[in-house]
Length: 489
Image (tube, rainbow, N blue to C red; front, side, top):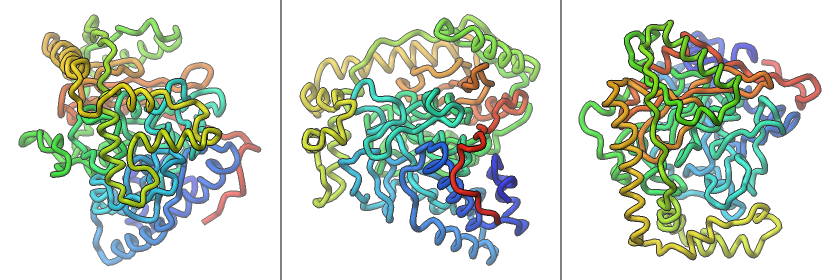
């Protein structure tokens, strides 16, 4: 059974459950065994921060529903790992990786969690992450939190960074510790770890998935998104989480037809045929020669799949912005105030005070960003610098950036080697897809970028690229690096 599960797609797992050769309970126990041997023991990836004590019971209930002929959809019985900044109103904590919130229980599910439960997903546990989504201090390694320690990249534990801040979510998927996972991004935190761990990550349009019930950084750039080993699996998870939420105004912006629901239906093998893809080489000088060669091979594969490649369409570089700094204090204070009167910290000031009282445990890398947000901003979003930066960033990333380039060159999407921060600044979607490995074993990936609510087109293109150029491979763990003997089913 273990060989049957490793690297299996969601559809393959569903088929096995339909045929009766696999149950959701057995699947959960398989991941529990693998987490024990690889994540907490052996190579110690430290990707899983907390196990859901109700996961087996959830799986058994969903198995019973299946036996009674009730299958909720493509995620029925599929184990999903959640980043630790996503609220679950159950027996799991929500801490954003912080010791200050290590004993904090959310009062209710985040909106996306409600939707996942309704879709029949099993909540496997919480993933480790860069503390407070990498908005605590400067110089903190990606994937480090005071509560969970350092997430390690399965392709080179101790050699390669895992990418942040959804490091645990990405590593868990890459190392087959779960079927799929949910990450969050404000400025690269889905795309970066997907790049570093040879998986697919979708950073959706801001407002496609509700942010209510997620520990925030900003009001204007935060979003959750799916992380998976294939484009289709990521599309299935995206469809389960997307939808309007009265508690998040941004989810009410999309017009009719902009939220198709079934994103997996856009996975078409010939989706590159006739597509105009612009190549954003504006920061290619940051890459090694072998990475440039990997990019060229990926582009050639798209040409052979029928895409029309358009060169010299570089996105502009956008200036530094104070948007995150100014929005963080207000957004975090609002979230902390929702935790109830018994919460250990209720404000950003309380959080800073807790760290000062426990410096050895919590201040290994400091809290410079927390201090700046508390001392340099009002929390009312009225500073002229913020207002001007907000307008400038949108103008540079949207009207003068992605939208201009797409329209001028009549493009269906842009391809970027690795990660660019412009989609995050614009609130626009991007999909990271594996595109090979360097000679030292480090993964390489490319991202497809589009305008607002262009997820269907990006999924079509990304899926076709993945089919034409399948470059993902599972990490290998040498003998002697695994923990206790694997359970046999």
